[in-house]
Image (cartoon, rainbow, N blue to C red):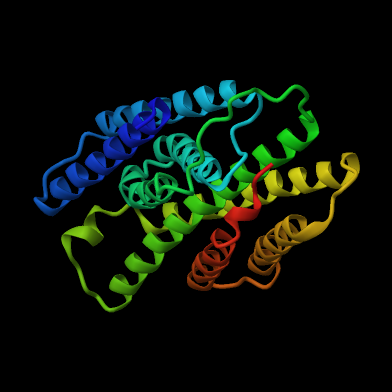
Length: 260
């Protein structure tokens, strides 16, 4: 294995281990140290950042040149958003539920053929607009991804509460109102970032069309319409959560088009 693959594997194992420890703690009905959890996730995030820096230096540009790098960048952006929102909204278990998706993304990135070897030479010229456009879009997708995780938690908790079914998992989850507030803010952030990215490509890039742009506009439109429906027509919280899950699931299938 190459050095960058070892770094990626190390962060993946760290996140998987964090998930297993928190899951065992919840199932045993023991208190979980939130600060320690944030520290572990923060270390994993730093390892991810080290990998992105290493590959970025090798490329001489933002490390989103192939599907494997995009998956790692997306996983890193989700972890960053969790570190920002997990402490602000006291949603410590949001991290536990995010880790399986992060591990899945990075696990796929490790598959031979998906994770491309480093180039022998750095690129000589870089289009800063293209790089900014792609990186901002993936950060937006990361916010959508974390919103989808929060939506899944919301649907799970709402289903149990409606049927008056209680369990250790339900009691351990954050208050349902905080989950909904967090997912709405994350969707809003994602809309702003993806909208800014597409606007930059539209105004400053010669080739602003194509499949990638079309997919981006469709994803942006779907989430923007959802926010309008919730605000104007008072779409129910449960329906909002389901739509977020559906749209992100469909958008995740287009990750391969997000390379710069």
